[in-house]
Length: 149
Image (cartoon, rainbow, N blue to C red):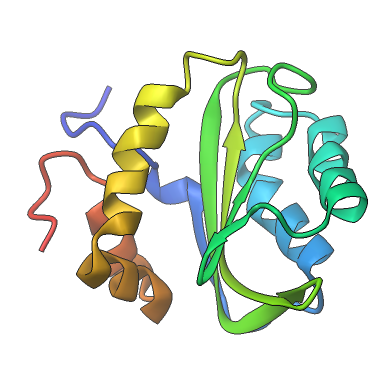
């Protein structure tokens, strides 16, 4: 057990230079959760299918996609992971650099951690740090009680 409480553990944060397409980005962003057994392949496919069916509605801010599928389906443990891509990836005519994967077990239990994480994303300075793609600086932002710059 670690002393610091992280909203997003370091091993669930990834940075890449470029990614071929948004589907590959979603798969790569989901990989840490899949490897730890927090989600199944079905959950990843559900996120991709949702975008294919409903368009890029998960792009909720400039360069930012909050990726998710229906709560519970393919989710073993509530979790989140983050992928920052330095070169924007086209998601149906929307450029995306930040892929935040949200795996929720139900409609309620993830709301507190999502609120904490969105506070970081809504801070303009912190958002720029995330967009810069420096993994050490990004990791620092998600340590609760960290200096948060």
